[in-house]
Length: 456
Image (cartoon, rainbow, N blue to C red; front, side):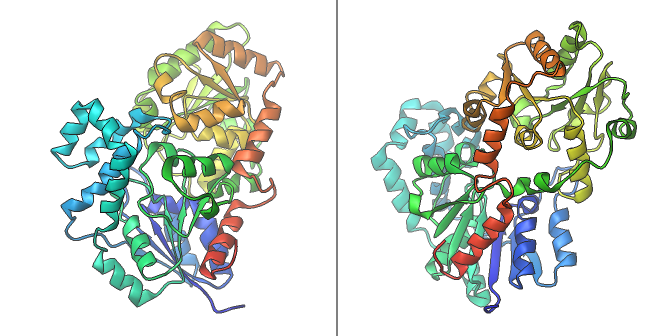
């Protein structure tokens, strides 16, 4: 083997490691030295998000982690980055300009109030001349000297950042400092929604890795990443779904989670608080619609809370509806992954508003049902990432609770009109290099190639 590489990952927070654990293990297995620098965990979460990080720390001798550095004094001038993030939403090609409101609070006053009150100013801000001027100002911001010194002292062969485009992130400091030192740099787009709901690229790395062709197009169209710097890997975070098998039969699984095995159940997969806020009444309306339909009146609804929005389900009781798991948990250990896998595997169908769990259900070839009503329409069809699901046409799209119950009844009868579309979506969106090709391994090999300055 050639001399072992020194690979540095700069991750927004410890939870991001869930997507890179298999990548890190692959690279360490080749003998390379991997160091993960991470931001801080969300302070208000009732569960651990660093278990994947700690597992690698305890099991891999050539792996280490530590918090990333951040500016001791945040230069007010550097707020131009947040202005650029905000302005990017108003560029003519962006699919969701209304998302700018979500990030406006990152901008210092008085600019925040100006952008809030003046729609014309927002459009002017995103004009090509002003937007490019902001980018030029941004490029003359001084490098973070502590980060620069750290990179000089550790001299890695490559710096890998993810997700790289969140507002007020320290990851950009490492990429810019590494580029100044002529260290190869990589950005990895973390998830399917990052390119339409987060910030933008403040520096173009030597390589940007995305899941598929659709996200590659977004990187170029919305963030000006050159096509020749974009490489497709598939979705590493979903690799474990392709390797797992059920560990319990239907009766045993139902017994374990304390629901009756006499009837099938549909799995309601909850969305984040940003998408759905408190969706308890929405789910109960869905459960009632099933009760009112003669073919689904005995079907149970098993609710899986979103780990970042689980508190809304505490103490809730409703006939023919069960909530499991009771405690919020990040899906980052083999045990939690297996429980989650079993819950989808044994369901008759999955239902939700707008969630990445639809992607996971598609991998397991489960019928997927979404309900688009006025309550959540703005967080569904109006979201750039949700449009990928609509374009792929693998969802059963309904517009009312009674219609969703009728669709569930059809699925229970054995009809599955979207099976072919689900498989096509998984092949194109999740594993474009082949269903038997690990996206984590492809990403790891790409990182190795960039570090060795080889052609990918």
